[in-house]
Image (cartoon, rainbow, N blue to C red; front, side):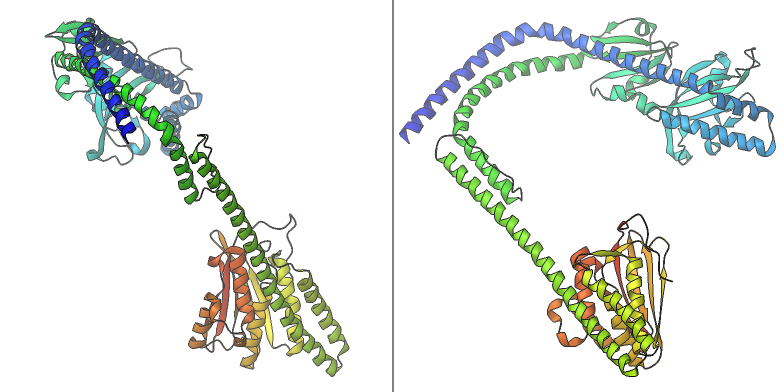
Length: 590
């Protein structure tokens, strides 16, 4: 403890000495020497900002000018304008629609700066999307342009209705670039003018260069002194003298800088006021104080380095433990401190590797458990229908109907082969499963003297979807023995398959005796919770099918059952859409 106090005292004395030296150096040298230099550099910096902004505006406006030239020379647009000026009736409106569609495509190419494009033809008819900008020929800025007798010009800032809504209370500020569009097939300049193309430039996007410098104050002015726009509403209404337009000036301690934008004939005037310069000089004083803080920081850094050699390895170990606790089981901590912390890190790494191996082993065992459960469920289903089929063969043999026995045995062999060859996780195309059902119904119809009819409705394209093997037969068997036969009269079973969004719904319905509300509630509960099931309930097939669906596709694909006593029962489930097993679709049975 005493040794630590001694080191702490030594560091404190050293730190105080450095602070005293920083105060002396910063106040006597930095402030006095750098004051004039910083003032001059500050003025040059504001001048450079204004020049950079004007250069960027010049580039943007030149790009718009070149883009406008491209639009006016577009052959398709030229042809459409010529047709517009000479056609009538339906063709007149069709041509307008095609012109506005072509202009909309150009807007999409430069929607970063251009809000909209429309045309005012030589008869002062406005051609625009949805009939907007009809007041353009009567607007002050457009009249000013036509009076100048120029082929192209940039207007001042004016407001137009939003082209999305055309509502007067949702007007936006734009600068319009108007350029004459001439018929390239005519030599005479005036007679060849087909109209003017108006490009509405987004004022906010054009001024965004100014907005990127929070302390910049500037405004755009036309050569005649009219203000176009700027960063300060109060400053924009001041009188613009010719002196400010022609050269840099200093008035009442404030600096004014002018930069020309030749493409539009504008001048960017920027200013830095005396109060801003004085405030910046205070920053110089703050700089001297900052130097003092820097020296203090350096002294503190030396102390921090010493402490980091001790706390650094502990921090690495803490970070590794936190990442491991958050689920990053690949975490490995490398500590080379040569002390007890390194030993602790090695122990942690061995523990993490052991836990990772144990989790992988548990995951493997869980997968094996799921596979075993699937095999068990399949094994429960297969003997069930084999037993019933053998009973049918015995019954027919007693009646000595040889041909029927042959047909019955062939159908049974097909079912038996399918059951023997089916793996627990195998999937078949729906057409294959329907063939299995057809063979199964053949067996049942022999046994019970055509006591039922079976049909299906399968939406186009669904015959090739993949379903779990032998997933439909137990459901149909349940409908036969628990729905149709207890009814005592011939019945019907119908299979329907249809897409519902990203899933396919498979439904089997019958018109048998149905299920009472109490029994239906019990069946649904057993399908939800396997702990409630009993081997004596007679619905092992449905329960196993539901479990197979949940194991293969998740709990949302479980089996559902609806029924009304005396009317019938519906059993349905949904599956994700899977690609077919091969390129050749299985055909549905006839």
